[in-house]
Structure formats: structure tokens, C-alpha cells
Length: 267
Ligand code: THG
Image (cartoon, rainbow, N blue to C red):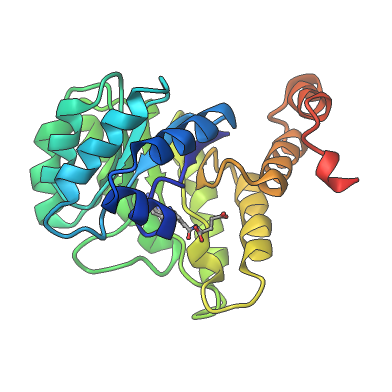
């Protein structure tokens, strides 16, 4: 499982505060913690700061990269922010994200074409969010075709089918899960990724719903997640789900997690 650590997001109060106060020590501490907990990428999002997003994303990346080698996932809908962020990022970043929205697609594609960047591609277009698995597959197919034609190898593409709240429409979770399965079988070597919090929007005990949903998605082949890498229960669930779905030879990862005390919180 490829983990993208979600904590350096200005929609979280402590990060917004740290940015406002230019508290680089706090940002570095969270980056170290996410990296040590096993994040393969550190998501960086300053989207709430309209007009200063570019400046703050660059500041965050520079601070993160002063303490860890883990590459960043540059999380912005704005191709100009992503371009500026890439100018300070060293190593191979993840782009979060491209979509079929025309302006975003046309402005971002030339920036990422023929690079070895990892690219998250959202299954949405100017027609809006996808509802059904068929909507997601139609969008995924256009994205894979466009990205590969622009020299992005399929193995560097992370399709985000987009999670919708199950409280809004009880078909939403199933349609998402079906899409994951069809994308993973239809495009060998591709990755699928998502955030989890939208699925539980409007329901109580959200964290529990998010955990179960992650496990179900792993059952369909999901191989990357934008999550809090410090969440012990989530980590235990993810490791175990991978073991139970045939992705852990000799149960080696499960046993290693056990030896490292990752299941002790259950005692
Ligand atoms: N897909 C893609 N990118 C995304 C999302 C997605 N980026 C943003 C978001 N969704 C994923 N990132 C976050 C970041 C913070 C939170 C949720 C999603 C959040 N955290 C809680 C908090 O801080 O209160 C809880 C964190 C915790 O468990 O401790 O709200 O879907 N491509």
C-alpha cells in the first residue's frame, strides 16, 4: 500500500496556524512523523489561502524537504501553483491532481508531459462529479489515454475514482468500489488512490466508516490511500487487509508489523 500522508493540509487548524505564524518547526515535526510512520509521499495543501497559496505551498515544501527525503504530493487544483511548487521541489513529486476539467487539463498537461512525475488523475470533468461506476470508467479511460499519449507511463498514473458521501445516496460506495475493481483489472500496472473522509460525510462515528471503507476498497484492488499515517487502527487495518487479499507473501508484512508492536493498541 502506498500511503500519502494527509496531515500537512491547511484545512486542518494546527497547519493553518503554523502557516500564519510561519512556524516551520511544527511543519518539520509533522513531516518527520509522517515519513517515519511510513508515508511514501507527503501531501501539501494550502488551498484555503486564496492569493497566497503559491507562496505557502513553496514554503511548506522547502521546510518539509529540509528534514525528510520523502517526496511531496502537491495538492492543488491550480496548475500555476503546481508549476511553482515543482520549481522548488527536489526529487520526483506526485501531482495532486489533474482532471478532465478543460482549463485544468490543458494548462497542466504540458507541465507534466514526458516527465517521471507521479500523477493523480481525478475521474471528474466539466460535467461535474461522477455518480456511477460507468461515469468513473468513462473518465478514467479518457485520462489514461491522454496521459499515456503525453508520455506518462501507466505505472505513474494514480486514478482517483472520487469518493461520494454514502449518506447522500446509498449506491455511492458500491459504485466507487466497482470502479476500483474495473480500473485495476482494465489497466494493468495502474494505481488507484482516494481520500476517505467524504464517504462518511453526514453520518456519526465517521472514523469507523472510513476504516471499513478502506478495507473494502483494498479488497477491490485499491493500492494507494491519502490518509493520516499516524492512525494506529487504520495502519493495522490496512496491513491486515493486504495480508488477507494475497498481497503479503508469507504474511511477512503482517508479522513484521506485529513484531514492531503495531497491534499492541488492541491489547
Ligand atoms: N483525493 C485527492 N486529494 C485529496 C482528497 C481526495 N486531498 C484532500 C483530501 N481529499 C485528503 N486530505 C485530507 C486532509 C485532512 C483531512 C481529511 C482529508 C481531515 N483530517 C481530520 C482532522 O484533521 O480533523 C482527521 C485526521 C485524523 O484522522 O487525525 O479532515 O479525496 N486526490
